[in-house]
Amino acid sequence: MCQLSKRYGKQVPAELVHHIYPVDEYPEYGYCLWNLISLSRAMHNTLHDRNTDKLTAEGVALMRRTKPHENDNSARTAHL
Image 1 (tube, rainbow, N blue to C red):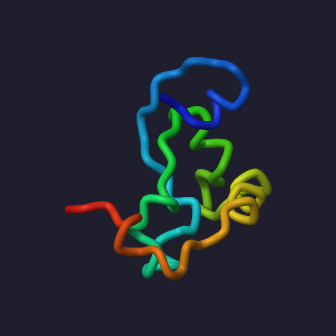
Image 2 (tube, one colour):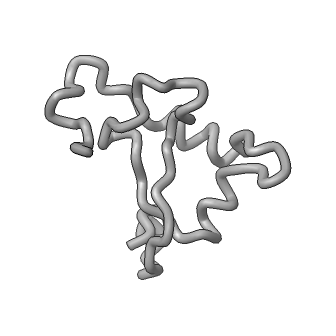
């Protein structure tokens, strides 16, 4: 289920997992569960500029709303 669509009362299947804090800038958060959010392709495209792959204003706003869980990596890290 797309987590951003769900916030607006819509049930849209998720197609992608988005890193709220981009992995190229924050590799230490790459597999932390709190940094991952399931999204539809349409919602994911609102968070990234498809030409530059940089975060849009919406993507930056999501990042600012999501605080890193610095001391909780063991319980919040995705298992490979």
